Image (cartoon, rainbow, N blue to C red; front, side, top):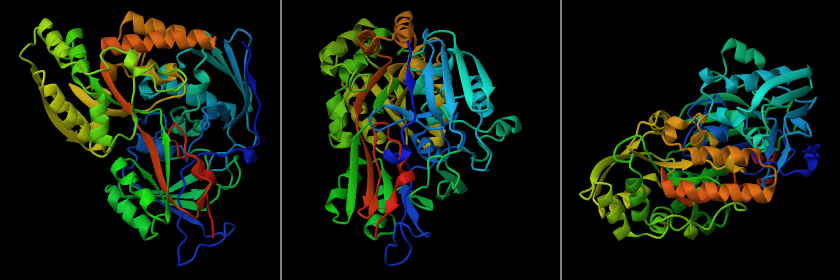
Length: 512
């Protein structure tokens, strides 16, 4: 297997990003003016600055403006250059060589070298780090750095999805000196388009353009991000032109944007999925028939219609359009309350049981409504569900520990199913505490899909994986929705993507 991709001209690429600018004063300045600051707003702030550890969407959206991985995924889900200009697999697929961009620099002016890449991946692989994406890179046996611009990953086996895994901000390259000093996460020092000048948690971030960014000049000189927990307040601020660009999560607010003549709504289907996570390590979810009963009792379309105004579509575990199975072909995707009651009785729970479901306040904003609909539906089979809403940072801590009976979650999708799910559903997965379930079939299917290079055979493997996962029902997949951003009509250059990234804000400009 040989793959060789060379650098595409950055000038010909539409780069996704996170930049918002409102020109101070009564009139917009020309694009070339030096005072252009993008004023942006969102409702959830980052929960931390360590790119290797963060799992919250709000953190990833901020950090992807500051840090860079070796490669990126574009709006078409294709791998494109970032810190690396080219990459090549050896014929046996067990060696992956990257050439680094000689212009790549960290925001302190130091060149990005192969030593930084090696140290970053060794940090990710170190279990003590607690890296969110560690399981994606377990095929890395060793890393060579023959010169400052060349990195060679020696793999224990062919690993088709590893390039996709390397495109994520959870695989960002950080300075070797910061790793040695133990300062990663205490400050943000990357090689991306913007520097973080100020972070006032839950209030504001101030970013300035990284003049040394290898990707070229940014379209604005800086971004000021306001954290406004009430998205109706964000929309009000956009009406009065105090905010130029906003990330919206609530479909109730997003659907109001097209009614504003001065505003533009960007709406694109995303790979992320809304899900009810069961904890199969806690009774009675330890019982297969109980989990299946819950799956049969839930009307996914009603959850979507009630919580998200129908803004999305019912989904199975795989959300990648080219690989997803029609949900109607999966176990119990048509609600069947009688079958659910029968399964509960067979499991010894004819009278039901009590459990608690946790959710994060504001991420997603539909969490409480989803929980309420599910609470009502499960009551019909005797499940008494107590809803406990938490602040995001408290929820994330509980979620990572698997400290819940059930959890309402919005989990990120990836362009490859192995990259998307191996951390949960393989025996070596580093988020096993979150999933609390694994079986030999899931693990075997994941490993087969990881090594298989034939696209048709991979699709068949992951179709079987999806069918099995839906049938054993450790989680109840609900629906996929949309990524929403709103902007003033004088903001140009933003490209929404299925991954939800805001990286193209790096090329956004403010028109007159």
